[in-house]
Length: 500
Image (cartoon, rainbow, N blue to C red; front, side, top):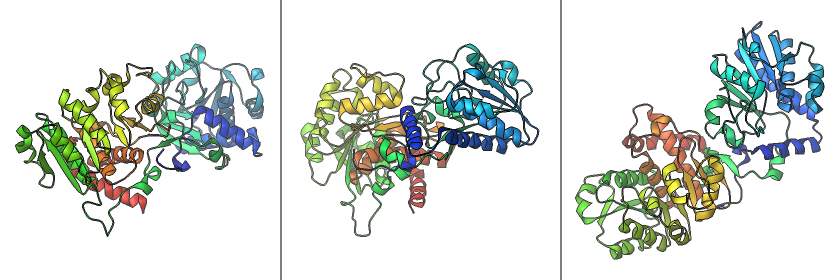
């Protein structure tokens, strides 16, 4: 962990941590019924904003506390003039605890849960199961959710859409997409991880009376990748600075796929590095020199020349991999970079070249290093050990960071960044247009440029992912990787506005 404290304002909780938050709140004097009343009120408020007096609403309640929230919402919606039908999975006399109390306060009819509840309904409140569901939806609940998913009825979900795992975002059997999900106190990791994120719609976080102080006891170690998490570490230019105080990044260039290193070098410059050098094979130097005039090109003919370049004390960060090819030369460059005791970013071929012996790479990582695999590279590098290469993205990114001793950024629409201590961030601002050739090279260059300026490795990876997504968002549709470079200044201005 690069620093002692991360902001709890952007903390993400696991299901178990949310249970602990509830328990701590009750230990501090907040009754369970008060928390449930507040939760149901928040749900009702969300529904009231989406409906008008007389609109028909179906509230689907499960047998636990999520169903109790549903009973509260149904009562308040009825009092506000909505037409409400309530369906319950199970029997009222088998409810217990706070859910039973809230069911007792509901004066309307309780119907058996069935697809018939969905007919002639303008909106559905999904209060069947919350984030802690541990099995696939089946039986009556599965049938109803399956029908709901096939309908065009808008859904407001309580905590998570029923069937979505609150920790992993995975779908357990079936789930219906919501237009809005009302959750409590803090978002859960499953709200940001796919496919859960795509099913939650707008996620509204309601304050139900849980004291903020309980987060100190819980000590969350996963966060949304929001600038609030790392902006204090961001290397803004200083009046007394010069190009060498802003760092010197070296990007290893490939002999044929030259576009990758050129994109990475440009991104490193845009992120603020004072100097950027492409270490070029002699036969490709002329191509590299046709790129940005501000990028230095050095012809590197052999390993000794590369070691001499990266050994320069003014060089502060290195990037090896993009467009380098799967060769012994690439492997040697990676090991030389790691042996130079400099901050390193390894991407693309710099990772895949170790697929046959990943331990040789991991053993060589002794200081700040960021690995930026996509799913295929992740499988090649980590698939031979005990780390699963499918499923829970957060858990496997954390495990990969421990195994490698590096910060691991597992790319995708829900990019996860984790360090060996277990601190992790989940990115949420990457638009689909980023699925284009060269976008990963830009990301690797961004991270390298930030590390060259002294930003801690985990923060650099997280900030690079956010800037990458923001530049793409600002450009919009029709994006190609070159556009990311051009829109990084606007993304940086946006970051500066947020930091002001």
